[in-house]
Amino acid sequence: MRITTWNVNGVRAALKNGVDNWIKSTEPDVLCLQEIRARPDQLTAAQKESLEGNNPVWNPAERPGYSGVATFSHFPPLENQKGLGIPRFDVEGRTIQTLFPGFRIFNLYVPNGKRDLSRVEYKLGFYQELLEICDGLHQNGEKVILCGDFNTCHQPIDLANPDANSSSTGFLPEERAWIDIYLEHGFRDIYRDLYPDREQYTWWTYRFQARQRNIGWRLDYFLISEGLVEQVEDVIIHDDVLGSDHCPVSLLIDLK
Image (cartoon, rainbow, N blue to C red; front, top):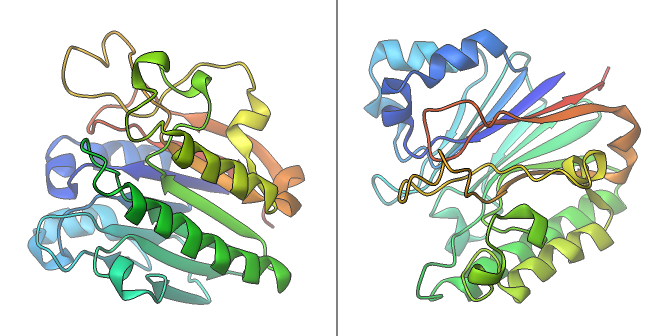
């Protein structure tokens, strides 16, 4: 099974940039998009058809042109749940939970702490509430895949200029500590497990020719339950794929 996550930085703009061609060529079994910034009725019929395929679930933010996630799958899920059940986060369309036989996927767009750090506490609150939900699922014996834009680099290896960004949101100690907490609560950063020394990024600012110079950040993750680790075949960061300021990331896993 191929599960692909991608922050498309506006689904309508991304479709105009041809991201649907790459999606069609790779045919992920489950596709999780973040920062869609649109409702499905704002897409043309052709745009919707190019994306949706089977079993589309859209969770746009209440605020127009902001945030939002969407999940698509080639086989019907057992259930879908939009949001965490917490209104202050759910109004921003940041989560879809999708249950399949044997595992549950969370499509996540974790809040950005903002340049002035005004939303850091909101972001940390999101991490805390999500973890409490995941702890309950683990206690009930569920296997969980968290994927999406975490808006945090865990370690210095995960961004090109760690020293220069030590006081920037996305690399603050209190943000990074939450990734540690998830790893202490039964999750594994499976890409880093497979490639402990690889310097590879998933986001580049549009400024300063950052992508051409590969001055990036690894913000897009698969955190998976420890019980799924032996079934993982690979994690691929498709850093050659354009169409957004993020690139897609795919988890290849045997979930038969």
